[in-house]
Every structure is written in structure tokens, then in C-alpha cells.
Image (spheres, rainbow, N blue to C red):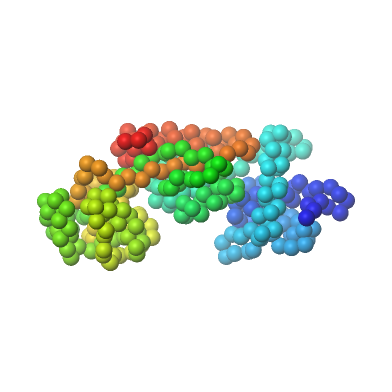
Length: 320
């Protein structure tokens, strides 16, 4: 497949625009990265598609999905275009500097809201731009590998040689309830692992299969949790709100409910010596051109993770 115009020359502007849309996952975000208007981006993509003889993207209600031809084109041109950008130092052919594109950051919505974005507010004030995506770790890491994201806060350890992962924090999980609900539970029996102490107490869960609760039960009580949740809501912040309101018990990351614990809105039902934890990683791609703003975001998050440790909200993954 050829990526050249009829006169034999390669249209770098169209390829840059294509790569921006491919990595951003939408025409709007790609236009912002490329510093172009949305109609201009659409026109350039249509021209490129005519030259290639087929569509590059499937238009979705929110964003675009690359076709196989787009994946093939991105694999061929991403490296050379990134290298060219590094050589030119981010300047246009007329010498006018080009603003560094937004840092494309992904992660779990709850951690981004509670810790990550507040930590980066100062950088935004200094001119760093962010485009943030939320989702499941596997999906976000897949986007990182193909260049749709620059950094990912991942709740699973990334695999493969194309991604470099650094331990960012250990999130500790706690079993919590509102004080009124906790008063109905014999915590002495619970400390003795007598789970009949929880009989009749509703469970609030992130998912119907109770993934976080079952992990806690397995780690702390050494048994499998067999129960039906009373409330299922796919956002841990909403789980916390339901628990505070007295809907039932749940297991949550300590950082997420630290304020409510301090204020007495929820209480821990157990404080095991060996609480279950999950290491969170900061992942980035290996290689590629220098991106000063990406480096600044990475450095800020690693620094802020030390602050989180000092505040006892979360702990760095230091082997404890």
C-alpha cells in the first residue's frame, strides 16, 4: 500500500493529522492536538482516505474507531513521524513554534478524581494540558501501547517490553460501614472470623460478582464470599456514598474513604494486621520522541505519591 500523492510526494500534514486522531480516539481531540479546526481535520482525513482507497475510521456516537487499514498505517508512520518531530523540535516549516500537545492520561475514574488530577492542578496552571480517559486497566494499557495514551495509572502490572511500569502506590482495602450499620454488628465475633455476625447486613458492591469483597474475604477470612449484593453500582465513589447513607457494608480503598473515616461518616469493621493491598503502577511507552510535558506529569505523580504516603492515604509500593 502506498502513502504517496499522485506526484510521488508524501503529504506529511495529512499523516500527522491522521496520527493525532488515531492516538486521541476522536476527531475533536485530534484536532486540538494538531492545532487545527475540526473541519480541516475532517477534510484532510477524507483526502487521505480517497488516496488510500478506503476508510480509516468508523464514526461512533463518541469518537472514532480505527479500521484495520488505520492500524496498519499507524504502525508504519508513527515511528518516522515521531522521529521527525523530535528532530524539528516541534517547529513548523515556517519556524513558528508549535505548542506541545496535551498529555494523554488514562486511569481508573475514582483514583483520577480523588488523587491524580488534584496532584496535577499546579502543572495545568503552568501550561501543561491534559486529556484524560477513564476505563478498565486492560483497555487503557492497550491504548497506551498503540500511542493513544501517553501515561496510564494502572491497577494491574503491565506486561511486555513496549511498556515501562513504575510502582506508584499500594492501595489498602478496608471493610467499612456507616456507624448506625456498624452498631448492628458484633465486631468481637467478626474479629474471631465468625461471619454470622454479618447475617442480614446488606452488601454494596462495585460489580455483581463482588470482585473487591471476595478478594477481601479470601485474604482476611480465608474463605469464599457467597452472597448477593443489595446494591450494585459501577463507581466506587457511588459505593461509598451508599455506604455513608446506611445502605450496607462494602470494601473500599482507604484513600477513597479517608475523609469519611476521619469525619466519622464511616467506620472500619476490622483492622487486620495484614490488610489486603493492590499495587498501582504508572505506565508509559518505551522509546518515542522526547515529550517534556509527559515527563513533568510523570515526575509530579511520582513526587505526589510520596505525599500520599506521608498522609497515610496510600503507600508507595516499597515491598511492605
